[in-house]
Image 1 (spheres, one colour):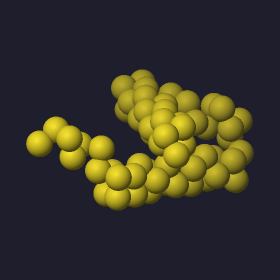
Image 2: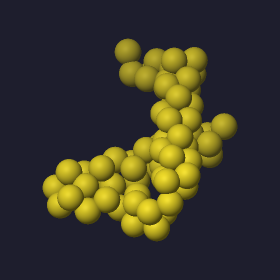
Image 3: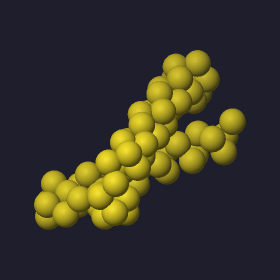
Length: 69
């Protein structure tokens, strides 16, 4: 479970960096990696959605910040 959370956080960070590059330069990194294939582009975007849902689930139910109180 810990490995899954780390991988999902890595996916979100990578897509966030790609979005930052797109915002600053106009170069779409995701389209570059998928070679313009719309199905692959959407599949990778759905992967980001699943990663975000997993991290949200993990934060709600496992409360990693509980010890900081």
